[in-house]
Length: 266
Image (cartoon, rainbow, N blue to C red; front, side, top):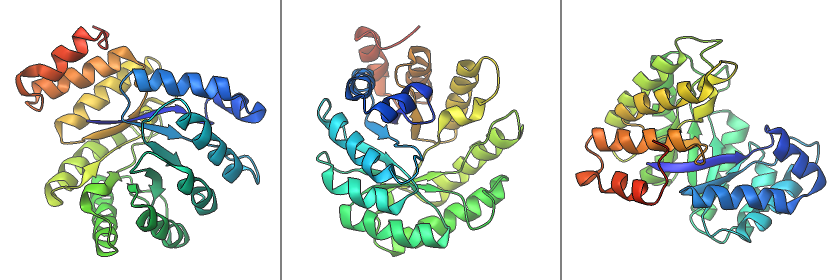
């Protein structure tokens, strides 16, 4: 299960404040904590500061790489910001979060992914609103995978995100996403599926409970990557337990190692 650590994101007030003041120590503490917690990729998001996204994303790449060797996931819809930050990445391969089927975004981000041999988070979203039903999600995923592979992106570098929406506004979104994951993983052997996990619980009470319940359900249908908080010990414990129960952790060795290392929360 590939873990993309989500905490360096300008949607969090503490991170936005650190970006506004260029507080490298605050950002680096987050990077180190997520590295220790077992992240495979560190997501960096520079937010939407007018005219500054390229500057801030590049700054994030530099200061995060100073404290961790984990590869980075560049979280930006802005091709100019990605073009500025990608050459600075030392740990390969990088990941780009994200591309979709909006024409301008697709045509400008795809060449960057090819040039830098980046892994790609591919959102099930076209020119219109994002897909809500499982059928729509699968249709967009199919178009994305076929186009990206045709353009030279290895299928193993594609991480399809069917886009789960908050249950408080769309009570059927989690089920639609889970059903889509199962079809996508079966239809395209070698492709990966991923989600921004905490979207599902936005605005709800007991968010951590909802997050880990959705994670386990999605993993049971084949999801093999997630953008999440690796410092949430109960969430990570659920992830390891799900892998063991589903037979993806031979002799439960990963679960046992995580327990011995004190990673599990219960």
